[in-house]
Length: 405
Image (cartoon, one colour):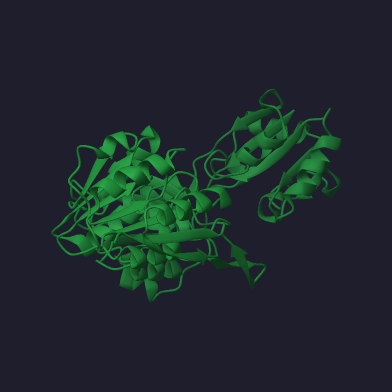
């Protein structure tokens, strides 16, 4: 049996009698150096320092499978802790879990802030994107930091992303003799350095019913600012190219067909105002993200239309520009309907990934005597690994612009 035991702020000495007895009877105790040093009565031969080698931990546990093994974790192991990793490698009936009060709970208590309405996110080993997105979308957020993604760096990233006014609490030295709480603005936080043992709480200074608008009317809104499903979003760089080819006009009407989470429609809205962008999406989950993003960005010039093109397009005003991001196998039918409604000089931009769809769009533009051009976008973004940077490529996208004569 694998016993996952949470260790609270008081350390091993604060464990219950039953947890202490489990540790004493176990054949192996796995944990951080800090926790293992608090077990002087357990011989070193029965201890394994966790460090960062999770593969080794699993391998050792499997070899000890018929013995009781204890894994010590900080606070609540179910909250961005070791439990998730162990459940991926062992059956649930092989595991018992005894949680303790987490450092996040202690942090909210020291800051005297309630947390039933808070989002919780971890930067530890996960990077900054989830943190930025969660803070943008929530009134109050608790953040597990690490030495690389420290409070000052998180504050700087939020300022750069246009997060607006926030009240920040950094709760340091949790579990030590002199815990302390810093309170200030994002600017104050960016200018300070903190003990590595900390959690961060970020809340809006002046909460309102709707999330604030998180962007100016510009091109290239960071992907993390949009709510989306598993990376299903037109990436910022591709979005910028597509909109530049589309050239939406001030006061005009634009259709975004297969709008997904609405990133193109919302960004184009800044260029069409006081016009209108109609974002058409058939998938219920994607439509939920679309509505959420319209609210989050205060994109009042975008109207979400639930339905499948081309039928869902029939009741809409005639467009000056049309973006097609998804077609569900009806690409030719959608393009033919668009052609009957688009004014002369109007533009259609289609993003496709497959060679087959590229050929279908080019064939249509040739058949209907459109002026067209193709742009192949291959975007790579930097990613850090072990203190060095390398490039990670996204799927190439073909962006086809057609202008009606």
